[in-house]
Length: 140
Image (cartoon, rainbow, N blue to C red; front, side, top):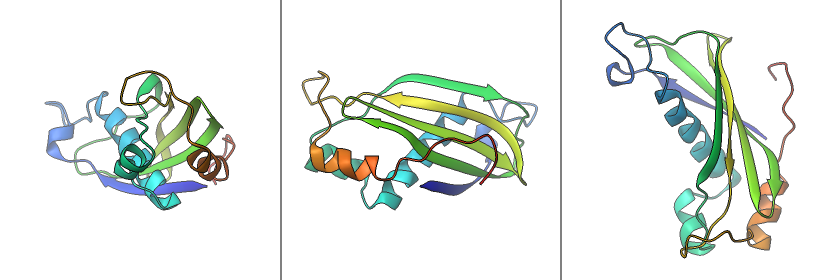
C-alpha cells in the first residue's frame, strides 16, 4: 500500500535562503509514516497503548536530489517495504509537482517499555505484513 500525503513547506522549515533545511525532511518521513499507519486503521498511540510496543528509528537514509522552497506544496509518498517480527522498513519519496526531490528510508525495531527489543505482537505483525509493498524505481 502506498500512501501519499500533501505537505506545504512553512517558513520555519527553511533556512535564511528560503530553502528547506535538510534535517526537516526526516520530519516529513515521520509525517508520511504516521499517515501510512493511520491508513492501515491504527494510530501510533494505539500501537503504543494497545500493543505495548514503541517503534524507534534505528537507521535512516536520505538522498537529496533537488531542494524544496518556502511555500512549495510537496507530496510525501510512503510505503512499508519490509515487515519482520523484529524489524520494519519504511521507504519514502518526496515530490514537488511530480519531480522527485528526496528519497530515503527508515528502519524501526520494536521495543517494549523496558527499552528492550520485542517481537511485534502477531495481530500487529500480520496487519502490517499484509500491507507491505515492494519499492519500484518508477512512480506509481
